[in-house]
Image (cartoon, rainbow, N blue to C red; front, side, top):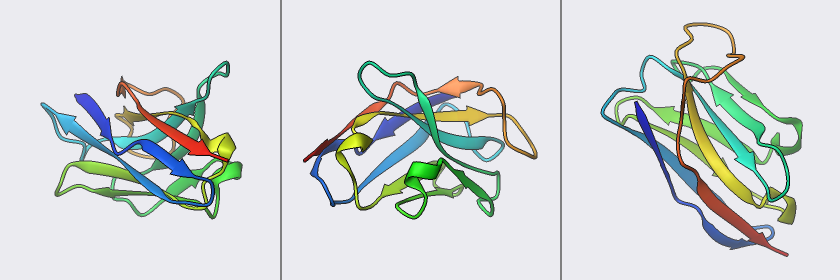
Length: 121
C-alpha cells in the first residue's frame, strides 16, 4: 500500500487546516490508520490514530480537543482536521497504516512521504 498525504500548507496561528491521506494500489479498509509528525531537529512523534471502523480514536495529549482524526473507507481516505493551530504544531505530517485488527499498534507497516504544515506566529 502506498500512502499519499496532501493538504499541508502555511496557516496563521489559531487557524485551521485539514490534511488527507489516500492509498494508491490498495485499500485502507483493513488497516488501523495513524498520523505522526516530525518537527525540525526533533524525533517523529505520534499524533493520532483511528481504528478500522472509525469508532475509536487515540490522541497525543497536546492535540486533544484541537485535532480530529477521521476516515472514509468508501473514499479510501483518512483525514486529520487541525483547529486552533499553534506555532509548535509546525512539522511534516506523516500518514501511517498498520495491519492490526484490534487494539493500537506498536509498529506501523506503511508510511507516506509526508506533507509540510507550517504555522506562523
